Image (cartoon, rainbow, N blue to C red; front, side, top):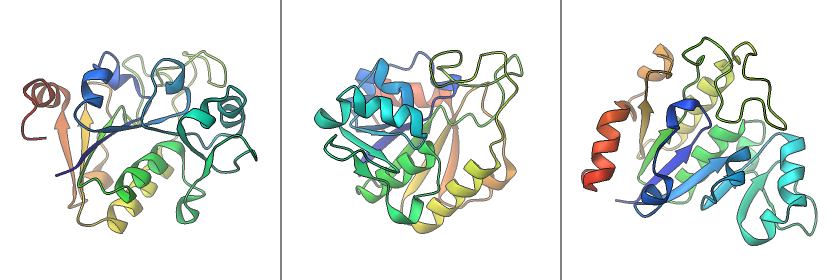
Amino acid sequence: MTVAFVLGNGVGRAGLPLLHIQKLGKIYGCNALYREFTPDVLVATDRLIAAQIQADGYAVKNRFYTRKPIQGQGAHSIPREYYGFSSGPNAVAIAAADGATRVYLLGFDMGPSVHNKFNNMYAGTEFYKPADSPTTFTGNWSKQLTTITKNFPKIQFVRVCSNTTARLPELEKIKNLQHEDLDTFVMRINNQKDL
């Protein structure tokens, strides 16, 4: 079995040992993650941060996907069938297309923070809304993840849930998407078994 880990930027993934997780499988990440950690694959669909990532030279040295790569900067184009999808779902689709048989979704909170505000690890930094902003609408992300799980029916997707993860009935109906609590996931990676 080939395991991949996709990092959304919800606060539910705060404190996870990313270097340890990377030893267990490829990490696919989104947007500002590159400021603090280099995943195996980075995805950014938002134009401004994608341009910054390329301007920083990141895409020349690392595998990076965006909608409209700047010529000569090393970026790859988002797969055509997911062109309109957001960064997180695109990272999930790329992990699946790369051959992972189990894909863990970490930080895909898709709901408000514990303070009922904008839920993002990078809130208040460049290209992100302030931390006290209202929550982000996540209906499109649910639809996009549903499409991806249908497109890859033989892959097992696992959404890791913390106390900031929204319960979304539409995702709970998907046969090849299970939900697992954060404590169980941490136990699995610490024991390096049953991943």
